[in-house]
Length: 368
Ligand code: SF4
Image (cartoon, rainbow, N blue to C red; front, side, top):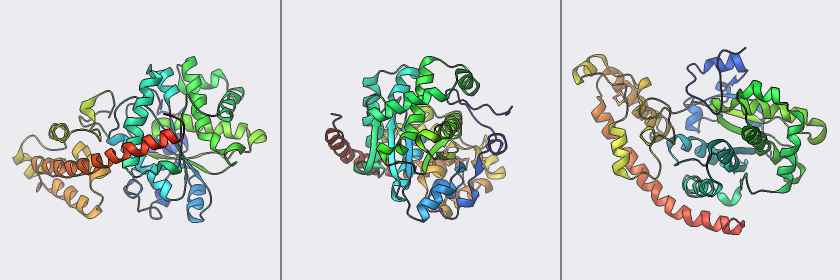
């Protein structure tokens, strides 16, 4: 039995990501790092693991068709934790992927008790608007609501139930309810249906996820094999990324506004959150000058590392100055605030333009 428990509905912290390599057979992403070093998350090891990424690399290098699929959970405001996946969608679109994005509104309804109307509103105004502001070309994206899609998708989802047992689902997810079963099968259909004949047939598919989503990936890969004779599906590939910690040091969660900065936060609110964020600093300035800080434990450093500073040399300077005690937290937070405010200002102007594009897209596709 693996020692590390991963449960997509109750994920706290996976202490040692390396365990995942040995316990669950996730491969190290190291060998792709130099080839895709233009991507900050790959270059900095934030994307640390994969399953079958070789076939995606081959598709990128040889300009073969491939799909990038991801789902959004419409349950709260779009924050910097979500931005990581949005940036990856934009990245794969630039790499030539056919993008499939779904709003997991059935899962939000069945598992989280969110009404379909609210889920729809969040998916559009929080997620789609931010995706477009971050660079997604929605007109080249296949977007759908789990609650409102096409017949081949629903037929396929229902067929998936034939080759999975209740005991198997209990083994993977522990406590399982009818709502969770529907969510699990819908999610597998989300990932696999771009390979149905109606969508152009079998092709490599990449799904970027946090490690907590690996149970879904494993089940979906197994289902792809179990339906070989009927659909000739390729097993989907996956990449695994580390999570950003919340600003108070625990989990970053949409249900805890102090743990995140939303991309639509007003400057005043964002400044307050950064000033109150947990750092890796020492108890006094003297101590910090003496012993240096610990950026590895600092959530302000996380913001810089994941999102705000793309230049590696600039980031390394901050890391070294923190370690040596040359930089103290007050100065460092002021720097982070400065970069954050500039980012939010630019991004929120883009969001205004994005709203029009999203509305046009929804009307054109019969969603308005
Ligand atoms: S100096 Fe900056 S990176 Fe170092 S612990 Fe303080 S806030 Fe974090």
